[in-house]
Image (cartoon, rainbow, N blue to C red; front, top):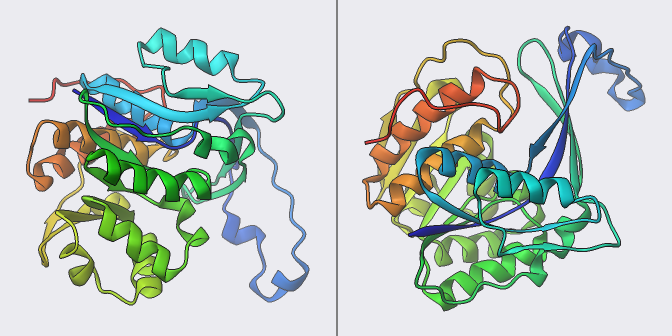
Amino acid sequence: MAALICGSLAFDTIMTFEGRFAEQILPDQLHILNVSFLVPSLRRDFGGCAGNIAYSLKLLGGEPVPMAMLGSDGAEYLQRLETLGISQRHVGQVQDTYTAQAMIMTDRDNNQITAFHPGAMMQAHANRIEPDAAVKVGIISPDGRDAMLQHAAQFVAAGIPFVFDPGQGLPMFNGEELTRFVEQATWVTVNDYEGKMLCDRTGLSLDALSRKVRGLVVTLGAEGCDVWVDGAKTHVPAVAPAQVVDPTGCGDAWRGALLFGLEKGWPLVRCAELGNRVGALKIAQRGPQNYTLDFTPQ
């Protein structure tokens, strides 16, 4: 069975700053901020939430079906998906704009500054979810605003359970819209910061939010994650990585593992344990789609 992954396909330009951002930014001078960072290391990777999640899920043996939009420069990404054996049937292409682009700068403490150009992603609502017996589960990850709103409603209409994973797209929505997303979703995933923003905007606690869905997961980076089911919280410890090289795409790697477990009907805690394990492998490699597995998921 397949997992439908709504989100972005993007090209990531990843730069490494060998110092610390905190040492370059003066708190009392933020009103006239003008900084420059020397980045000796630069590379270009395939990225975007849908692409990264699909890569993780495929690596685990799942069947990812990304739903996304590429721009006029998207031929290279289409070839990438074909090479990986990932379905392209719901990947559209528009010719009057570029594929989404992320420029990510990471300092020595793994803090990140990101500039994101949405490009073709803003046309993602042109892709429409229809009932599909082959699709068992879905996810809405960061995408164009209209696409996220419409795809949530379409998942419900199609009878496909889905994960609401707003990520960096969360600030685009007000409290009423976010509450509606949660009510439509089957599961919700956020990181710690996003969880606080979600609670603030909806006026609901994590306890209350978890009672509206089958499960809510708050990822905590190096501290693992908290799994909320019907108001009860279970902490799932992190898996220590062999080394910390690059955090880019760790959350997406985790979410690919989540979809793998959900498609198999696993309890949410077991899904989170697999996610932590895959995230530890990803963070030890550069780039969001360059890691491999050293185990076979059971």
